[in-house]
Image 1: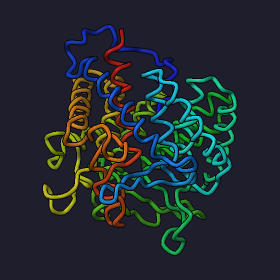
Image 2: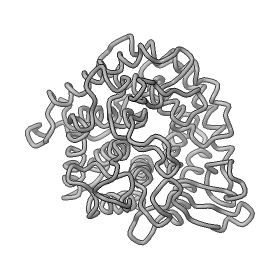
Image 3: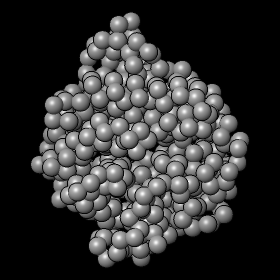
Length: 397
């Protein structure tokens, strides 16, 4: 989630170009966003006051929810705020504010690395859109909680505290998504320590998480006493050596963002390497929406993951803006294809169905038999973010 995007402060724009050169026009993008507003109003009527939506089970028309401590808890209010920014519909803002009250206590949660998702994707846009300084306080306290998990010997923020018999200091590729939060905290507080930690984490991850072909392992386990790598695994993918799709998307998004925040060329090169691996992979389907793992057994007769497709689309739009020459156009066109695919009836639910979620066919953790071929709250978030980015960056007057 890009707070500067929502605040409208990003420098540089493609807005002076002719809209005709883009595959997606204003009418199409606005239609998808307006339909998202309508669908989320359906969801608003279903979500209990003290819960947050995670997924939906069609068999018994059941909305799957969580408390505020879930890693997914920030995506519902975050999506509402993106849609409020587009529509100006006050009911969306009111619902988001109610859910932020549930989330507020997570600023003190030092038992999770997921505070970027939980707090920055929710309180970040809330601060940008409302100017309420209480949200700033929550964010800065949460950033302090997040960096409490950093180990200078390892050079990373610890991901999981569980399975101590299996891992000593596990770091997952998803953790890259925290670093925008820390970059914001440095700029907002004037304290360099947050960005310093983000840089160390990004550099350590770049050194140890990626294979020669630029695909990523899911988990790298470190020895906290020495900083040495103990093992590399792909916990949620098809096999340790496979390219789990959502993990690749997190890496793409994370290093694209790190280049935007720092202008350090190594991060742009890394993001482009990841993008090229994904877009040129022989197992990437024609419609651009990946299988749940690029090396999944049974391709093409296996599950797609709309959440990975949405994250990739949003990241590729930004990478297009940051890249020069032919790569810029290649990444934009790939993102456009993904957005159009996700907006089709193959992946997007009719209004009033799917428990109020936008997208179908998400995969959470297939090896764990969890959330297979279902809607996922983070899939919706990154899909709406991609639509919003496209509107602002490529269609703005």
